Length: 300
Image (cartoon, rainbow, N blue to C red; front, side):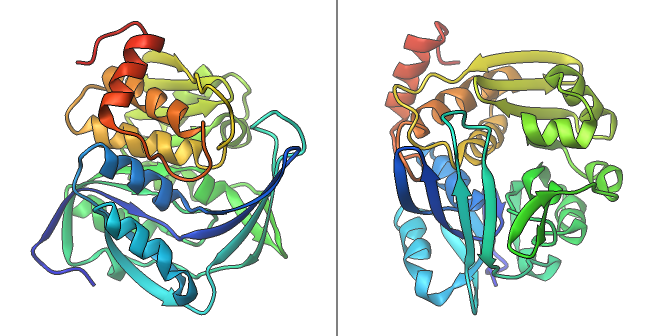
């Protein structure tokens, strides 16, 4: 439990995942979890950052690694970490199969009590990991709340993570300020392949801003306006964590920038993250140089 005096710029909420990533290039083992990717990006950008997570004590090195990067960790130790296998059969980063051999359990409203934060993101991996009670608890304290759709559309059946209809979608999104979705999740939840229309449908349920990633880049939808930015990694090595890094950066920069500027930074940081496995580990000057080179815009 956090100290009552703890105050943060941004907090990321979701379980660590111990990932086995299988691609045509081979098999890798990576420390994953949306909160892990997002928090590392936020901390690298200079924000006071924390995570709320669950994991096995044998994976305490993840907590130690986050702390070494300046991230406070409010961790609950469970019998198992969430054990995820991500299989990419082709070079298309949006085509993948997910299976889970163990789960770390659920995060509750009590786990987010005792600290204040300007913004928070729900970075869960599957339905039931973080529920509406957590979102409401944050919202009641005036927190800017983002939610990644992956943690609500994915349902564990046996060891397979599959998409299933989400009856609580409208009630949940009515409590959310920013939605993060990828194109595959958006098509399933909104019924359209058109990412612009999908963003609009999400927004009609309540969120003012939508961050919608796809294989080529990110679409930012802000109260009817849209902004688009491509991803330009020199090499695509680290697809896993793409969306987590994107929303973590967007939410972090949104505290000091408008949606258009925050989207630009999100695209740039995500591009650099995808050049390597694991969380974003580059510097702010590198991001600024990348923006100047690839997007032909100056840093605001």
